[in-house]
Structure formats: structure tokens, C-alpha cells
Image 1 (cartoon, helix red, strand yellow):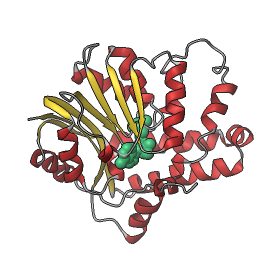
Image 2: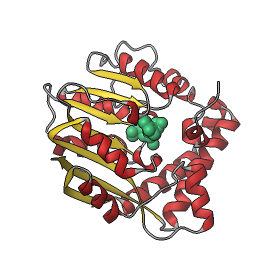
Image 3: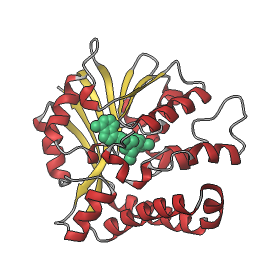
Image 4: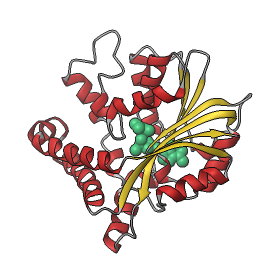
Length: 275
Ligand SMILES: C[S@@+](CC[C@H](N)C(=O)[O-])C[C@H]1O[C@@H](n2cnc3c(N)ncnc32)[C@H](O)[C@@H]1O
């Protein structure tokens, strides 16, 4: 089967490592998994569960709320949202192997009644009923070139007054040819805009900005520590998952550190309301 182009980003390869990690950590046999127990493997964004807790503080979710998670990955964020607030989540993910594993993990956490995992491109999701109460997305929109079209599409999927909570990459200065290459090929990110342009695009496509935070420093520290931790556990990781899986993930982690260290890449957290 042909792999989707996004698989060139090495965070998305060697997915079977997650099942192996569950096994060696003794988590494959326990009756019900805690959604935070997998934080280091199933939260594919920065700052782990703390980032989801920050979203929970401002989204006022509860059992009566329907949330759309765009680019749900392995479903880590969706499970924490659902478990902590009782909300239901439609978790949309482009890559079939990630989506299948996300579904499996959700079942292991006893959250299948609350989370509907759907494998599709967000642009193929049609409006349903009166729309979602909230939309969340962690580090997915960076993969999508046409932000105005994306925001306009997201708007159609939401109720008027719904909240949208996004964490994403931003452009801090003009990238060098090498940085452009790292972004396009190693991070699958071909279009980056400044934090101000990002907010303006939301504003022009059906949303009113409520708040925006610069995440650049916190994310730079996070990716530096992630790389250092990964290197320090090289032998454990290689023994368990193989040298090729280590090389692939190391290549990705190092590319992201280079981009943050060079100060071309930054990050933003935005909260806006659909009008
Ligand atoms: C960096 S991962 C983050 C996953 C998850 N949000 C998390 O924080 O753990 C971004 C995810 O967005 C997905 N994605 C990218 N483009 C997408 C699209 N057009 N529709 C749906 N998912 C998409 C990717 O396949 C990937 O799994």
C-alpha cells in the first residue's frame, strides 16, 4: 500500500513501538488503562498532559458537550479531555495506522462510548446536526497549507459561539534554505505564518480571537529536554525497538531542536470564538 506523503515525517513511522512500550511497562494486561499513563508515547505535542489541562481550564467542557479534535494522532489528548470532563469527542485523524492504534488505546482506557475515532482528512468531514460545541487541535494545522480554507471549513463544523483552541507552529523570521528544507521534509510543514498573521486569518474566517500566548520559549526547552532524554535512553530504546527506529526518531527530534534553536520556528496557543 502507498504511504501517505506525511509519513516522511519520522515521528509517524515505527508506530508498533507503542504496543511494545505498553508490554514492557506491564500495561498490556491491566484491566483498565489510565489515559495519562502513556503520556510519553501518546501525546504527540509539547508539554504532555499539562497542555491538555491548560485547555480544560478555559473550555468549560462537561458531559453535555461535543468536541471535535482535529489531527487526533494516537488519541492521547482526546482521552484526557473525555476522562476529565465527561465530554464526547469526535477524533479525526488522517493516518490509518495511527487512527487504528488510537481506537485500540481508547478501548483499553474504557472510553470508547465517549470517543468516536474517524480516519479521514479534516476537509472531508461534513457538518453534522447543529455542530460541535468546541474544536481543539494540537500541532496538526502546521501540516495544512491553506489556513484560511481550513479555518473557514472548521467554522462550518461548529455551532455559533463555539470555542476553538489551537496549538501550532509559527514563523519567527525568514528561514534559511536549510531550515526551509527541514521544515518541508522533516516536519512536513510547507507553509508557516507569524503569530499575528495566524490570529488575523482566524479573525477573517469566522472567529473572534479571545487570547493568544507565545509558547516559543517553553516549547524550545521542551524539545531540547526531549532530545537529551531520548539520547540518554538510547540503549534501552534500541534494544527494544531496533537501531533503525532509534535513528528515525532521533533524526526528527534533532531537526525540531535545530529549528527552535535557530529561532526561525516558534509556537502559539490560541483561543477564539466562532461567530
Ligand atoms: C503532531 S501530530 C499531533 C497529534 C495529536 N494532536 C497530539 O497532540 O497528540 C499531528 C497529527 O495531525 C494529523 N493530520 C495532519 N493533517 C491532517 C488532516 N488534513 N486531517 C486530519 N488529520 C491530519 C497527522 O496525521 C498527525 O497525526
